[in-house]
Image 1 (tube, rainbow, N blue to C red):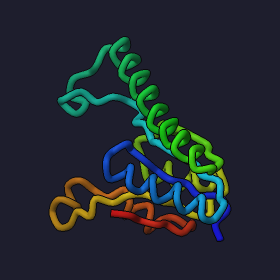
Image 2: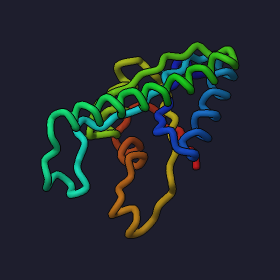
Image 3: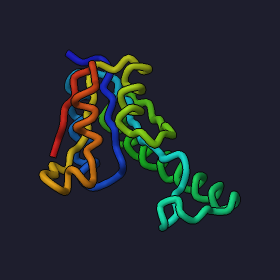
Length: 147
């Protein structure tokens, strides 16, 4: 059925449920899993860019984000390997999460994308946006959305 599945995670509780389902599906299909975490490029201050951060602080924050992101995908990889699923753990730096997910699926030749959705509606969805919705509408690869 599926040969390579990309699972996008942010490490949240909801995302962990999607990861668990992706691992089970990969095991069932004997598919390879690509665990992915998108890391922002530049840390914004509390003033949303209105107050510039010093270069040392930017480097420290970016390093911490990279380490935390790698830890998230490494945990997915270990959980998948425990179930006999071959897994690749990747992190990608991008401020456009949906574009990064779609590009990674194409680059790694994935035939399914698995991700979680918070299921926000109305004004919350407008204000917070929906990376899942953007992936759904722009991906040429099938997308499995879990809530």
